[in-house]
Amino acid sequence: LYLNKFVHEGKSSSSSSNGIHKLEDAAYVSRKHGIVNSTTTAARLSKSSPAREKGRGVGTKRKLSREEYDSSLSANESYYGPSPSKSSSFSHGDLQRKSASFGATEGEDDYVPLALNQPLGMKNKKKQKKTAKRASSSSSLGKNATSGFDSNQTRLSERAHRFQGKGGILSAVASTAKSAAENVEKYMGKATIGGSNKQLDESDYEEMTVKGTCRTLEKEYLRLTSPPREELVRPQAILQRHLENLKRSYYELGKVHNGRNREYDWYCSQFKALRQDLTVQRIQNAFAVDVYETHAKVALEEDDINEYNQSQTQLKELYDLINNGGYALGRVRNSSSGGKQQQSKGKQRREREENRREALKHQNEFIAYRIIYYVFLSGNRKYEGGSSDIFKIMLQLTPEQRKDECIHHALLVRAAVADNDYHKFFQLQDAAPNMSDYLMDKIVPSVRQGALQRICKAYRPSVSADFVLKELGFDVENNNEEATGGRAWMEGCGCRFDGELLMTKDSSLKESVVGVKNSLI
Image 1 (spheres, helix red, strand yellow):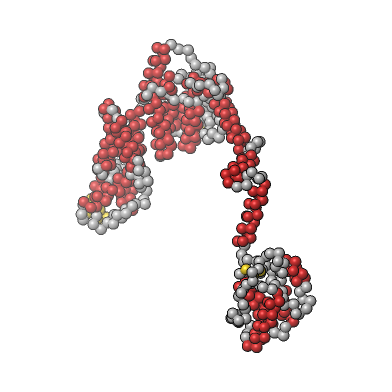
Image 2 (cartoon, rainbow, N blue to C red):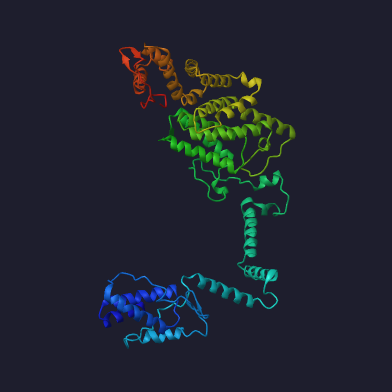
């Protein structure tokens, strides 16, 4: 409508600025003072138009004065324009008739732009909609529930009614509880022992445990995504045979299994599959300890610290369970027959004691490994529990355990690292029992770096390079390749040499990026 008015007056007037100024005046007057009626508006616009034609250019707004525009409003008017009451002479029908008659005559200047007789913005419209909706909802609630607590209570009851019945909240909760109970009976085998209302004891849990029937020796490790099936789980007798085959092929045949060369990844998968079958069948006896110990040792040889940590964590739980006389000690499985053997109490007691001795045979060795592993973790800034874990182990050690060769050696390693005694540390590494030196190799980089810094500060201005290499744990006398690698490592740290001398005063140390055999630097 604004555009039609502009085009009409732009064509009919002698100057194009006349229509533009009329449009600006109509919008400004309507918004600020309100439109009293169409006749007065047209008269005001006709008065102001000659002045604009004479001395004002296009685009310049004329300042309105109080004399030309009276801001007094009648009783039936508002600040924004005439009130939309029945007595108002301006209605929506009038707008439609006026908009249809645009362009008929030039003298129709009493046109009122659309919606200028209503308040600006949408706030009042939204309020009117909310009020109307609130009134309709209150009328639908009935005469007795029009306001107050009764009205709120009625609304809540109606809302709750919508969630009742099939598909509602109550039915969903009931179906969830029912499906959970069915899953317990399905996965735990409660239906075979008398239903879910029965009070379970250890014999019931034994009956619900999976009894493997698979006769295949080799099986790749796959993470379980569903309840284990007995036809895919190997019993303990089959697991024992496969463990012996793995030990023989790895240690005696040079990783040749059934005529094929195997990598560590294959052995790791086989060991993890063994551990999985032990877990689902709740086998926690000396054989389970043997499986975890073997996997931990193989992982140390292959420098797989993550798998070693998983195995030693489970070994700690098994050792505690067996020391405390857990139920797993007295469980004797005969997976081929699928039932318990009938034995006398005396024979059961002897087997329990034999099982205990067999399971704890290497306990002290793996306690020593765990101490050295925690020493390694204590040098990692991201790990804050290394030292506290060491103290917990030391508090639990008995006097007999402290005299054990492996544990005694591990405690000396802890003291050497804590005192920054690199000379003692490398002596202990050369005399490490069992597989402790594999774990000590993890600590060597930080010990060597700290030792080189102390040597360069203590020996000035120079020191023998061979002496430094010996102090850093390099075998200079018997291994020329290791001596060459050690010197290259020192040069990578920023050391400067003058023949066979290390010029400590001229050296600017930094962390080396050169790899050395038998070290992680």
